[in-house]
Image (cartoon, rainbow, N blue to C red; front, side):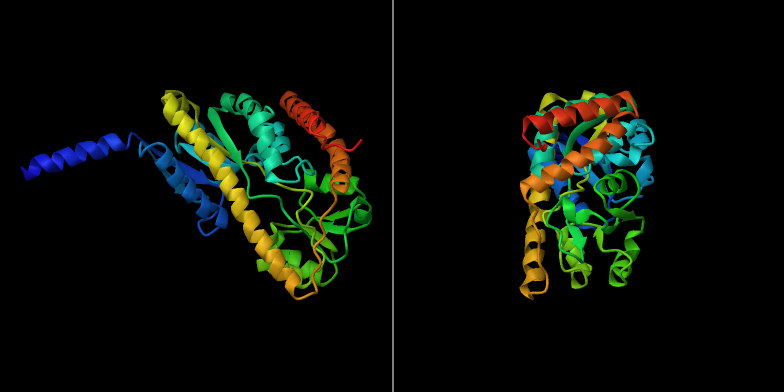
Length: 333
């Protein structure tokens, strides 16, 4: 009798879990984003009725962060959570859609562009030839801006010595009249403290606060106006095609719900950090008016135009992005 009960329990267990996937993240194990991504795995299990089990792996567990696209296509891992711009060397359009600097003033704008403005379809058009299916986009949120001097709009950027990574971010700030400086993140605090730079593109407000940047840079811009990475959630295309429709729906819904959850969680922490930073009276948070954000976006547009020339897919990204921003009144007149 006991053996029969055990066999029955084993059968139920086997039936309950039909699919077991390994997804590798581009974030390390202790990172807030990775901790949240493990909660996504729980969401998938719940939404699929226990049919899908996802093991989330931190960066470098199986392959390097720059190799996950090939690893997913080859079936070495089943999927990944990663910044799409890591693969711009293969297709320049990945860099443009991953972070069109200045385009977004909130995660919700990007999510609407992806879910309702054609972004998801374009991502699959670009990814599927590489053997991946794009499930959806998330983001840790809009980065804040660290500054030692008051910044209330585009005119205040002129001559500003700002730490900015190479590529699109530097080009956009230079086009806005700033003087970009290329520094690793590890040197930002010292460079601000010694006056080597006036401001820095660095991270979200709560991370900047935790690292003590507001102790020496008292004029942060929050919410930020410049950088917000698109984090893609993709899976092996053959695996995706083999899934029944209800499991595809469960995965798609889980990513959309997770994206909203991640963005709201980070924003909640940022708001708490902003309250903490301003409580002492030394820090003044600057929130740019919509008109100033639109002015910066129009300057950034000149650099998107240049990036669009890199490939036919880059032109598609540019055309779709401009059409969406114009239709939603997000470009300056």
